[in-house]
Image 1 (tube, rainbow, N blue to C red):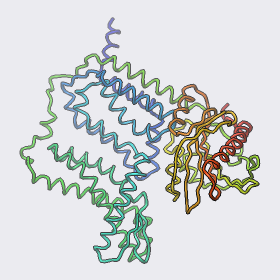
Image 2: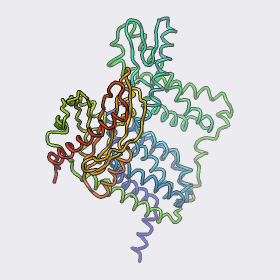
Image 3: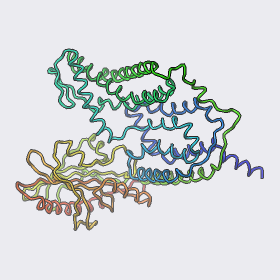
Amino acid sequence: MAVRNFKINITGNIWFQASVLFFLFLCAYWIPLKGIVNTWMTNEDYSYGFIIPVISLYLFWDMRARFDGLTVKGNWKILPVLAAFVLLSVYAILGSSGNISRPAIPVLIILFTFFCFGTEFMRRFMLPLGFLIFIVPLPAVLDRTFGVFLKSVSSKLGGEIIRLLGMSVNVRGNVIDLGVTQLQVVDACSGLRFVFPLLALGVVYAYFFEKVRWKQVFCVFSTVPIAILTNALRVGITGVLTYYYGPEMAQGFFHDFSGWLIFMVAFAFLFVLGRFLRFFPPSPALDKPKEARDKRSHDHAIKMEGGRSAFIVSTVLLIVVAVLGFNTQALPPVRVMGGISSFPLVIGDWKGESIPVPSDIIEASGAEESFEGFYRNSKAETVSLYIGYRSTAFLENENFFHSPTVCLPSSGLTVMETKKRKVEGVPFFNEIWVSEMVVESMGEKRLVYFWFQTKDKATYSKDINRFHLALHAIRHDNTHDLFIRPIMGLKKDESIENAEKRMDQFVRDMMEKLIKFLKENQIVKGN
């Protein structure tokens, strides 16, 4: 009987529950967590990520007095939201979506904590838990949207700084023309790399140095314009030094060192702003000291009220996610002998020549390997075919297959029309839905099809493709994953309908060759 009571007391202890959930969370979300740490190690813009968990733990320790008299009670109202995010995370992990699985990590930490330990715990410790959002590298979509905006702002402000110093400058888009040379404000110089760490720094500064809520909020949000202005200052100074000392001043050691220097300048601005806020009421003398704000009665221990059920449910959820994730990772790669680059250059009446694809382009596209060929038939009609191949379809990856709806316009093509199209009579699949685009460049129109394809499912949508991968993973059904994109030039005055018929037939011929090629050349290492 004594042994039984001991077990009950252990499972009803908040520290025991927190330790078990932490371990299971690491196991369940090891794949996206490993991807996050890899980004910290390989991308210097996110190297600060290693100190974020340390700061979060220190904030918990600094708030340790708040544990006194704490009542821990599971909040079952959170369970539907938690379950939805768990399902989303499973879809992201099994569907190789790092842009979803990684940002979900801090959200899931907060939801599991809220569910198991309740509202009062979250009210007291939301800051150290919420601070973990800064462990996540910014999704690529922000680089393509907010980053582009910041590049434009940094270029314009940098040009104005150069003018203020008496030099002639012309700013066109992201290019700063100094006459003797030109500077291009690339993604790394957009200022986005400063915004996220400065926000984290603003949160820490506000907590330790400001005691009034509106001043804390003001300090945190002020880091965004501070980051933009200091980065523009960096661009302007780089332009001035380049004008006098040559383009090498915009590269190498100075480029990297100036980034750290400007970061320190931004912190100095934040500190000066904090000193300035002291002139506004309420004055520091009237503020309650932090010790008083965190003071709790030391006569009360932590109370657990019915927390075991929420703990058990959380444990089961995390075990299920862990089993699915690790079960998927056990699937061996589906390789192609000779690589996908050995895809046939003769497809019916079409004869082609292969075009080498640089390794950095392959990696950026989200593929492991790729094939690109230019085909011509006896009627002098042409098709450009690209095939991206992933042998480890379930491997969490920062890059997944990129949609041409983004890539083609950025290469200078004008999109005239986008729609879905059903291609019938396709070998093995019978029919497939593809995305269709009509693009134009210098008066020449081109017809573009693209789709995503596992060993037995094809779809026009990248998101549906990820869902297919998740279904394959749950069934432990190994598969490759393909991205296929043919582009056909239109003849002069040719109708879109006629070009579609021609493209449909090419797709049928190409798919027959592709299915046969994969069947004859695929090998699964580890079997």
